[in-house]
Length: 375
Image 1: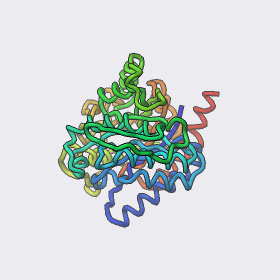
Image 2: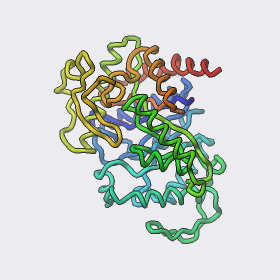
Image 3: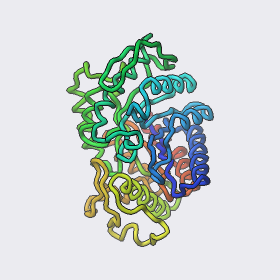
Image 4: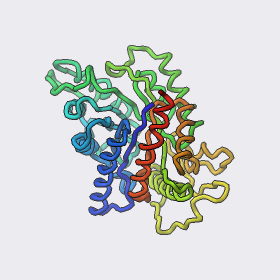
């Protein structure tokens, strides 16, 4: 099992000061995570999504963090592959360079981006992007292993050229696909790639995704392999706020998750931007866990019926609470088939002190608990 962190650089303050603060706080957490024994530090890539994610240049953040840390893995979760956004040659060069500088710590995830807001920034229609992403993801690994590359594709044309440098890892870093629906899970398994999946739906939803992924892997045709390093691996998102005070952790976590989900819904589906100033403490969930927001993102849906709270995106039973609560929830994700837990605590309204305390509690108590179980 691997225990990692993932960052969106989500901020409720989109000013210059807010940007400075969120990046300083993210680096502080990365350095602490390296010391505490977390396995990987992942960053997403989004463009033009105010407040939801200001992580628009993850290659810069990851390089900076790699230079400030010693052992933690450096993960692109993921590089968006539309050629006008990230040309395949530049992606290959940047990944290889980062892998060299970090001495083989890179994990290389790919995807297309999630919104028309982002695709349109670079002149694309989101609905037409998948063939371009497919072409790029098959092409880039060839640059890692071939002395020269020549490509005359439908979307990218490269005359015969040497591409330097080559990665530290041989043949190249492990590759992953962002999986937000059943088809992408099938593609990840069928192409021999790791899967980076959502986790707001809870362990039961993770178990369904694991089953789809492994069935596709077991029936895959090796001719469809992306790259030259098969990577059977599922990393699942896990919202977490872990404090000594159970109720305080739940309150902070649910409030942050509400901001996360409502800001996401704004960019993915339209509607109003979230405004925490208008929220009251009693409007997050009632005594039965009833959600006050309704949204849908990819394959995961916010449900009003909380008869099974783990099935809802506003599920109040994520890893919010004490160390014991976190251990119990993580165990359910492990039982569901996750190979890596992607803890996310940087959610909108969550203060830095709560995130740092969460990292310390996970690093000093939760991770050692599962490491000991393995031994």
